Structure formats: C-alpha cells, structure tokens
Amino acid sequence: MNVIPQLILNSIIAGSIYSLIAISFSLIYNVTKFFNLAHGVLAIIGGYTVFYFAQILNWNIYIAITFGIVFAGFIGLILDKIIYLPLRRRKASNMILLVASLGIMTALQALLSILFTNEFRTLSRNINEQKIFQLLNGSLTQTQVIIIFVAILITIFIVLLLFKTQFGKAIRAISDDDEVAKIVGINTDKIISYVFFLGSAIAGIAGILMGFDIGIEPTMGLNLLLKGIVAVIIGGIGNVYGSVLGAFVLGFAENFSMWKIAGEWKDAVAFILLIIFLLFKPRGIMNK
Amino acid sequence: MDYLINISILFSIYAILGLSLNLLVGYGGLLSISHAAFYGIGAYTTAILLTKTNFGFLSSVILGALLAGIISLLIGLVLSKFKGDYYALVSLGFNIIIFSIFLNWQSLTKGPFGIAGIPKPELLGVDFSDHFSFLILVLIFLALIYFISSFIVNSSFGRVLKAIREDEVAISVFGYNTFYFKLIIFIIAAMIASIAGSLYAVYISFIDPSSFQVTESVFILAIIILGGLANLRGSILGALFLIFLPELLRFIGFPLEIAAQMRQVIYGLILVLLMIYKPQGLIGEYKF
Image (cartoon, rainbow over all chains, first blue to last red; front, side, top):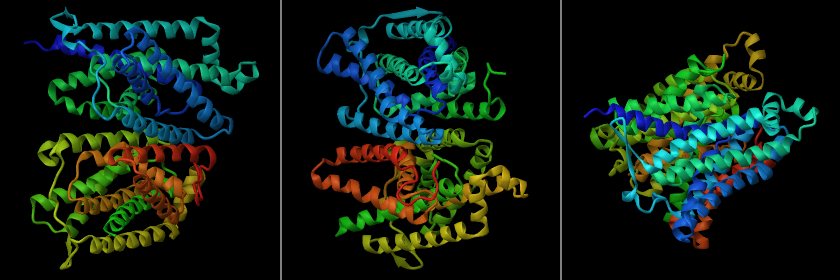
C-alpha cells in the first residue's frame, strides 16, 4: 500500500493545528516580546472546559465549545492583567517574564491534573460514527476536515484583522516600537490585553480541536506550545505567513520522519529542526 | 523517624541539584531549563550499570558524570550561540530531546516501564543499604559538592564568570575568552547534576523517564530562584523550603496523588510571586 497520500494528509492536519498555535503565540509575542510558556496550557484549558460542559454537565456541544473558546481567552486576559502587565510596567526583563510564565504553566497544568486527573480525555462521544472522507487514496475524519477549514479561516481572519483594521494597525505599531506607539496616542496596555484575549482564545480553539481529534491530557500543553514556537521561529518571527509556513514545514518534517523512524521521536525531530534553523538560518524562512 | 530520614535524603539530593544549577544560572547568568536531563543521565547510567553489569556504585557515579560531561560539552557548544531567552528555549528543547531518548530507547532504558531493582550502594567496603547510613552518604556528597562549588565561585574563574554575567563585552575586551568560561561552567553543572542522579537512582531503586521531565527542571530552577541566585547558601535554603513545606500538605490530609500535584501548584505560584515581588529570591545576589 502506498503510504505517501496518508502521510501528506496527516502532515496537513498537524500543520493546521500547529499553525493555530503558532499564529496565536506570535500575536502575543509580537506585542510583548517574551516567550510566554503558559500559552500552551490555555489551549488545553479550552479543551477541558468543553469536556466539562459537554460531557460532565451534558450541555449542548455548540454552547460548550463557545464557552471553551471564551474561557481560554478570558484566562489569558486575566493572566495579563494580574501578572504580565505589572511586570511590564516595572520594565522587567524578558527573562523574568519567561520565568513567571513558566511558573504559571506549572501551576495551571497541575491544577488541571487535580480537577480532571491525568487520564486521556476525548471530546467526541461517538468516535466510530464519524464520517470518513476519502481523498487522494488517503482518509480523513470529519473532525480533521473541520480542523483544516478552521485553520484556514483563522489565518484569513488574522491577516484581515492585522492589515485591514484600525486595531490591527495598532498591534503592528506596538510590535514595531511600543514606546513610539504610546507617544502617538495608542493605549498600548489596552491593545495588549485584547491581544491576550484573542491569542488565548485561538489557542483554546486549537486545544478543543485536538480534543475532538486525538484527545487531550493536562501535560500536553507545553509540547503543543513548543511546536508552535518552533513553527514561528522556522517561519520567521513577526511574520504571519511565516508562522503558517513554519507550521506546515514542521508538520511535514514530523510526519515524513515517521516514515523512516518510529513515531515516538516526533518531539526530538521538532527540536532538532529548531536547532538547525537557529544555527544556520536564525531569522527564519520569510525574514531577510 | 524513617519518614524524616527519607525527606532529608530527598532534600540533600535537591540541594546538590540546586547548588550545581546555581553555578550556571546564578553565577553564570545562563538561564538553563535542562538540568533534569543531566540528572537523568546520571540516574540512568547508574541504574543500567548496576542492574546489567558488575560495575560498583562509585565507578557508575564516575562514568555517569563523564557521560554527562561529554553530552553537556556537545550541548554547550550549541548553546554557546545563544543568549538570554533563546538560551533558555534551546536548553528546554534539549531537555525534551534527552527525555525522549529515555522514553524511546527501549532496549537500553526499558522506556516508560522504567528500571527496577537497582541495588543499594556499597562503597569502599561499607554497606549503605539502610536509610540512615545512606543519609550519611548523601550528606557527605552534599558537603563535598558545597565545598567544590564555593571553591569554584571564590576562585578567579568564578570572579571572571560573574564579570561575564554583568558585562560580557567589557570582559572580552580585557582578553578573556568568554566562550570557554560559559562552556566549562555548563559542563561542571551538568556533571554535578549527574552525581545527584546516581544517588537518586540507588536510593529510590526504581527510575522511569517521568522523573526527568521539563517540570523537574523547572522545580530545580524554583529552588534556586527562591533561595537566591548567586548565593550557595540560598540553594540549600531553597531546597529546604521546597522539599519540606509541601510535605506539610500531607499532614493537613491531602491524599498522596493530589499532594504531588499541589506541590507543583505551590512551586509554580512561588515562581510567579517571586518574579513579581522579589526576583532576587530570599538571599540572592543577582536577578535576571
């Protein structure tokens, strides 16, 4: 049997999830300039919120999903207000911000374990009843088709937001130089807090989609985020198209490496790719 | 009583880990999130040598430290290209790569099942199989390593290292090759961490990859940041706090499983609070 078509499809699905994390991470990175290591846990929080409302309380699934997305965004907003904003006001170095986010990640991840145990949870109740689509000699589940469409829609949405709206202009001004942005009258703290909400909500979407596709567990967040960061760096920091491109490069690299070596080495492959890029092309594919 | 001895042994092992990481992060100013990887290299080397060959404990400690030295030399060469938060990110990547080697090189490490039945150590004809005599052994190691560490930081090497941390450009103008200083301290820290790993392996007599994850590196980082960077007594103090305080949770009546997670919540929160209110820790002499 020819495995290449299925490998291509798997790479596209992985690339779609990574691009959601990469885009949302780099939105926040561009306005704050630090590695927010708590970002991945917010994705998982989104997933568990849906799990809680849809499977424990038996609410309507669409309402649960909306709740999950908003709740992830809300947590991101709160973290900015009570932790990152005070640190930024004090002009804390980005190492301090990184360590603080590391602490948040550890605490939230353990909190999820306490609330939901470390068991693997899946959000789709009828996994065997899912429609299977055949494409190019490979197959895709209904969830996976949705993942690809959502990734495309979010990318278009972010590009339009950044380049066609006042809000996007403000974001780009802050990523260029937040001091100058402040001088010309942009309320940077307010814009940054909106960006935290938006970025965290998109991370939540990624976590929810993963929950429907392969399932989630509390400790997944860091690895997911690191994939997003790898994608952002491969593509070129600060470039939306770069992040998406990087995500797909990573998706393809991981899945095609599985052709030759066992799948468990995926994480190692991602980091070796990162190190190679940082050493030889540190500004990424898209940046000159 | 046995319980108190048990906690004291764990405290000593973490104090050794803290001392060695403080050499790197506190005195060298290099934020590494990979310490658990070298800790694991020591633990696995000792576990494999003692269960599969006729090597004695002491030679397994030495071989583990040498292996950690070689691997840290290679990793340190890559890390020398990076600074600040990129250094932290890439070191974290190496932790994940080494963790996935522990997890996936099943013929050597038995993967997720771990290695059981690691014999208690015998050293120079003395048997350290009961907990009290093992505590004495660990304390001897701790005292030795404290002595070596304070020798390093008070030597001219240590002074140059601190100067590099404060102003690398200035110190290289004076003709010091800063590259070697940063590489050597990375190797020393890794080798000491490996010794702590060897002690841990023979004490617990069972190891699996989960003890050497990124969260463990974060825990060691929390120890030295809480105690205080660039202060050796701070690392002892930090280990004292973070090992003994969470034990109180067990007395309040949390079940074992939750207590372990609560420990993570606590040190995560401690990291965040320290970053906001006291980034130099309790008695630290350096902050990021």
